[in-house]
Length: 431
Image (cartoon, rainbow, N blue to C red):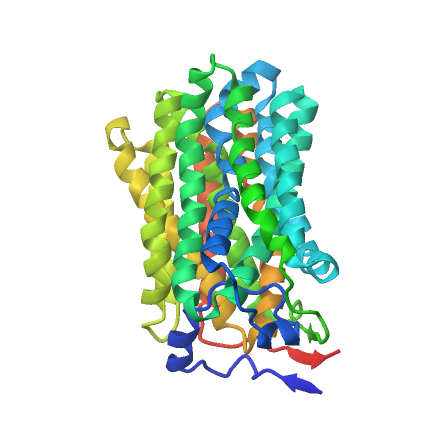
């Protein structure tokens, strides 16, 4: 049976927006009919919740821990700015390239087992990049990015499946864990490195500890039986649909700015005169501020007729924060770091919101999420690389302001299309 979603001119009802804003955790296995209908009784839900939080805490440290040490690592290994840009680009590129593998692996082995296995590959990636010179640095970054990309697609589906009645609350818990992991890694990696004798290897390698801890707490989940996969849906027409492409572009472009911040903001701040510790703490504080806007922006965005005004506001805040960090007097940097955090927390949560609100049902949402993350993160990887290349060419940071502007304006244009209250025009058929 084939069910065609409404044409792109059909508008969303306001009541549906208010209801589905509590369902921002996209289930990568939403095309599995039995998993959607069967919610297993959890023997120890608190233990599963603890495991989920510990896993989510590990989805950002491998990315944000490198930035405060990037200058030191580059000097130690003799990396050019272009190579350093590639180092910040590879993990983001792998987020996009490996995200589509997540549902395939989950159907073959089960989500819980895949998460455990990928936690172990993440541990190996962190070990590689901290212990085996330049080759290990790049290989470990690739492995870490691929691992995060796969877990990042599967974890929301597990949360939504096993805590279906608390989807709104769990969205907040999930977001909080992501922000906390990124902030702690950004702020503590340099002090840890100094504490253990000034070795950047130890500062980067420390993040093996929370990954191993998460694997230990997650292992019992692999022994519980979950729903068998029996029925699936195929969604056709996403790549031909203009609205779906706009959602994907917005996801990718706002992510590009986010990963520029993760990868380069501390180096920019160090270049302006801050110490590595001060730069890491500013990045950490900015990330913690994201929690506020990431929780409130989707709720506020659904109170209007569409999301265009909200997208414009958070993008302008993001650009203001970026330019403030790049050009404002040093005594104002914390103010602009807060502005940046407020903007970027909203841009990311609105990107997730758009996937839900532009989809007619959960099957379309899962496929649109895969497209937005797979293509979007691949596109996002170009931003950090461009920053490294431009800095290498010019020898200073001022010129990267052009990159901020080009990406930011493009994200606003894509967001103005994606923010319209329409559905993507696709067909969904049972296979």
